[in-house]
Length: 420
Image (cartoon, rainbow, N blue to C red; front, side, top):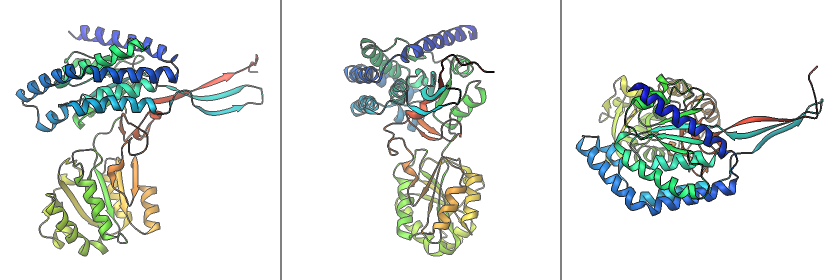
C-alpha cells in the first residue's frame, strides 16, 4: 500500500512541476482572467458544493467530530460568495512576480538584476475548513506557484467540488491542467509522502491545529513554514491609560476568542495593578471571561482563579485569560520571550522608553504598541489576503501574502565576459 501511495504522490508532484513551468509564462492579465473564471466557477457550482458539504457535515457529526471543527466545516451561501469574492480580490492585487528588487553593474560590464520569482510547487495541508482550498489555490496561482492541496478527510467531498469548479472554469481560460491538484485519498500515508518529496515540493504549509503542524514539521524533509499556536500577550505598563488598556484587552480576548491572534495572557505592572486588576476583572467577568492568575493578582482580586504552571504556556482559544503582575517592562519581556509563541504581543504604555524596549526585545513576528493583537491578519495589514501566519524567521514571518509566496533569482547579462 505504501508503494502505491508513494507512486500516486510522486506522479502528482511531477505534474505540478510541469505546470509550474507553464505558469511562469503567464502574464498578469492572463492570471487575473483565470482567477475571475475560477470565481465564476465556484458561484456556478454553488449548489453542488453545498450538497457535498451537507454530506460531509452529516458524516462528521455522526463520527463524533468536535463541534468547533464541525462549525469550521460547514458552508453556506454567504461563505460560497465569500470564496468567489476572495478570488476576485486576489486578482485585484499587484502581481508579486517579476519585481526588480535590485539592479547593478559590475566593473567588468556584467549587469545583475535581482528579480522576484515563484517558489515553484507549494503543498498546503489543512483541516476542516473547505474555504482554505479556494483561498490557498488563488494565492498560490497569482504568485505563479503550482499548488498541491491535502485537506482533512472530514471535508473530502466539499474540497473536491470546490477544486473541480475552479478547474473546470479556469482551464477554459488557460489555467495549466495540473497547476491546482487535490489529494483525494483520505489515507494519512499521503501526508508522510508529501512532506518527504525532496526535489519535487519546494515548500509545505500546514494549516490547522498544533498536533497537525508538529506532525508535519517533525516528519518533513522539505521546508515547512508554520506556527504551532498563538500564545499572545499584552503587557500593561504603569503609564498605560486604564480605560484604553481595558478596551484593547476586551477586543483582543472577546471579539473572536478561537483564533490564533486573540490574547491569552495579560501582564500588569505592579505600580498599576491595585487599581487596574479590579476594573479589568469587573468588565471581563460580565462578558463571561474566566480569569486565572498568579498570587499577586489573586491577592488584589479574590475572584480570580489560581493559575497552574501549565496555564502560562496554554493556548485556550476560548473565553479564558491568565493574568499576572510584573515589576518592570524588562520582566514582562523576559516572561513573553519564555512563555509566548512568537506570534503577536503588545504593550500598552505612554512611556517612549518602555515602548522602545518592548519593540526591540520581544522576539515575535508582530509587536504592537497601544493596539489589539487581533490585527495580525493579511487583510488587516493591507495585503488583501493571506495564506497563513508564520512564526518562523526564514523565509517569511507574520502574515503571509502574495509577496511571501515568491523568492528571487539573479539574472546576469554579459557580453562575452570570462573570469580570469
